Length: 212
Image 1 (cartoon, rainbow, N blue to C red):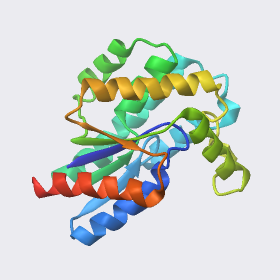
Image 2 (cartoon, helix red, strand yellow):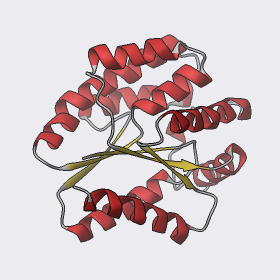
Image 3 (cartoon, one colour):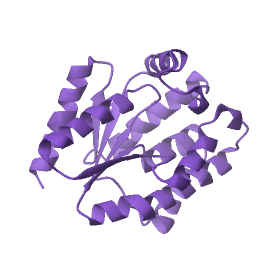
Image 4 (tube, one colour):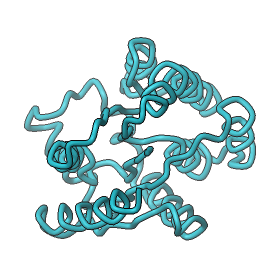
């Protein structure tokens, strides 16, 4: 099974990944947690370029191709092998993030991005995508609080430095994708207390795992 977590900056993915890992530990199922960009040694080098605020002059097309290169390496060296072993793969961001950030928010052709994914990456999609949804102003406030208090590195703040209008496009894009594939997406209200968000994730995953 392939599970992805998506959402705008500051939506709480890192915190919920920790909870999700604890939940899967309790089920006794074999799993691996990974992320994009990154997830592999080569991917981490690409990540350092993509998220570095010093890369602010990176043009959208170059940004897109770097994400796709990261994903090609990630799929072939980690995701597919772990799925073939029968493990659950949990990924912090995946293809939907590229459609939303580089396609909808950056203005690149979303159909072209999907074509690349289908032709080069064999259209591998998650079985379930948890979308942690909240207004951009709330998410960015959370993200900057973490950056300012040192709980997150400011070497990965390039997207937080984007204008609020960019993040509004990202959120709208995610909700649009969720509406197109309601059988895959589960929208979770991330404005609520942590325990309520965790309960939603637990209920969704319990139902999915029970169906296996």
